[in-house]
Length: 184
Image 1 (cartoon, rainbow, N blue to C red):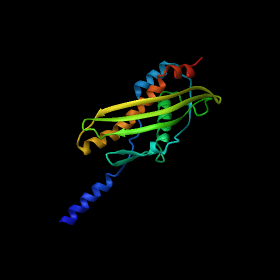
Image 2: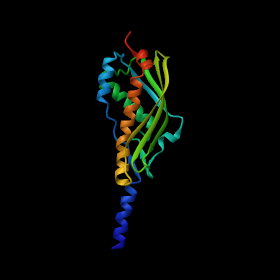
Image 3: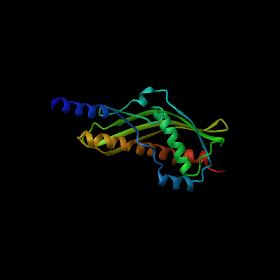
Image 4: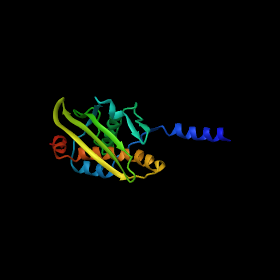
């Protein structure tokens, strides 16, 4: 009896030790704003990270790994591409390209009532190889959390793509960014 109970608990514990990120979903309110701002079509180049810590995301002791080669920089790269595609502004052969570096990527679900995600990235926009925009964009996203791990952990996991949406939204609504990529 005890062996069976111990086995069930261990399977539950082991399966809770690692989880994948939730797939990014484009922000459809942002899609409309992007279309209204008359941006040119863009490509998405490499989003990198010099800091290996950005790929070490832990939620109450359970690691959350990016579904894109265990790279959160690549997760951001794919999210940017999907957001542009949804707005009809992605063109792989465009001379205007967004590149960047993921600087921070932290989730905190330790509080009994609030979870947070802090993400920052340095984005550059290149036009035929010339830098026309260069800025660090930072967001903090908060959500309701719980003392109970069975609630707090999935809440944090489900809020990560929302935090990425906020980062992309902050970039896409930045006046300098819009000015750099607007149709002339």
